Length: 272
Ligand SMILES: NC(=O)c1ccc[n+]([C@@H]2O[C@H](COP(=O)([O-])OP(=O)(O)OC[C@H]3O[C@@H](n4cnc5c(N)ncnc54)[C@H](OP(=O)(O)O)[C@@H]3O)[C@@H](O)[C@H]2O)c1
Figure 1 (spheres, rainbow, N blue to C red):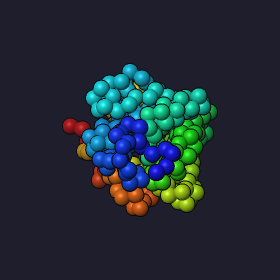
Figure 2: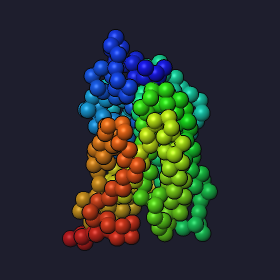
Figure 3: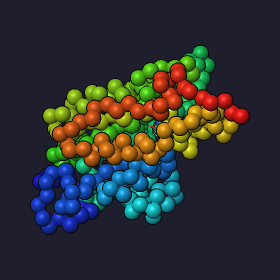
Figure 4: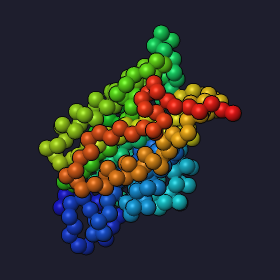
């Protein structure tokens, strides 16, 4: 067994196969857990018997989710080094994890590059790229030592196709995707698998609101789209990918609603 297996939260009396506790359950850190896809992932994994550490900045929301799911709340800003140190020590003391699910991220603005706002670009780079890097860097020794570690990065179809008004978010998600691909190559020798999930349009409570800044503009993103993906749809896929036998690496999973055949082709029915 490794130094950092998932023993703490579980009964550690019997020897267990690497990557699982005696009941076959796993343990994961999920970032971006206070709302949207991250919260849905916490719900999904908790229902499947996973031990989950739910991470985001808003402690009150994490407490509610913890109450509902049994997850362990850890309030942390993933872009702040001290918070990442605190997160790692909290999880280590509670027994560790075999899986890291990086979902925290987001978009700010839809300006074309000619009008790019430096602060929006910096925000997007910090959370999507540097935050994901910092948490992953902190947890890699634990995942390697476990013997069957998993990292899942939630990027976006914005990381494979650019669009007008997307340059800042495209740049951040292309960067997060590039980092993910390098990580897969670097960690294979350590038997850490690296999964990337790339969703298209997902109707979450806050993503477009935060990006566009007002409720009407956020509603318009999904106007007339019969069935955008939901956070639960994406959480199911995340859950499937991290629950597959460890030698099975779903390298890249692109998922869109049928109504969005491509970034530029969204089927909308006119409002009556
Ligand atoms: N919605 C979509 O259409 C869509 C499509 C493709 C990909 N994605 C990607 O999927 C991920 C989740 O999307 P979503 O729609 O669920 O977004 P969301 O509703 O805006 O949620 C973003 C989450 O990230 C957390 N977060 C933001 N900055 C953080 C920081 N510095 N430290 C810790 N946590 C932080 C937020 O929590 P706090 O504010 O409490 O910290 C929140 O839990 C993002 O990476 C997004 O880019 C979304």
